[in-house]
Image (cartoon, rainbow, N blue to C red; front, side, top):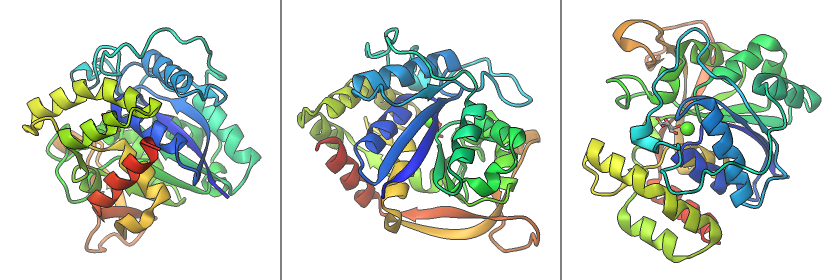
Length: 311
Ligand code: BDR
Ligand code: CA
């Protein structure tokens, strides 16, 4: 039986790459996409989600639009330097969609879906955790009714990518992240410790493109902007870190990852805002433990991704 998942997402170049990966993986049944601000305003990320599904020939999958802004903060400046003016690398893939959203309240949509199938649905957040936190507030029983949460976000022992300690998805809405990590459900954190080491270099990207499958061709169109950002920011010479697709890889092949179980708290103030503080020494005695990915077979993830996208 494939695992039924709802992907909460802010497409976003790597979100786009991750969703295509999930759609190509028989281990996963993508029930819906729910959208959130993050890589762009939510109007744009929602448009991109709809377009993605149309391009992928999967507009049977519903899209629910979610939060415009964090729980208690403002969202003003989308990171267009990372993902482009249109959030998809300005590659002509983000025209107005023909399809429309199924729901305008992603949090409510998540609650209804999870409560209708208790114990069966996995939530896969690939953006700020605002929708998930709002769903928790709307209906606390989703804590018990959700199968598990596998999220891309945080940094356990690695450095941050938007501050010395914070990863972008957590940093965008740290109060929401604190609620999600604090709830008594099974959370797996696929953070920078394992997404930064999975590196798609120019040869790998060229091999993907050469396969000329429809999904690979879309990826080849959107990644140049992301490559340019990585080269400017990290001197990678065209290579890119593989964030959101690595969370999908964890769902399919957890054996490619080393995990530990520790308590995680989210810093919501000062210079450390957005930091996921991991209690490596076991000093905090209360609260739930999170499964944290701390090491990865990077080549294994890359091989898996290529095999699925080029099939
Ligand atoms: C995360 O931030 C976003 O830019 C990416 O889509 C990914 O979800 C990486 O820190
Ligand atoms: Ca994302």
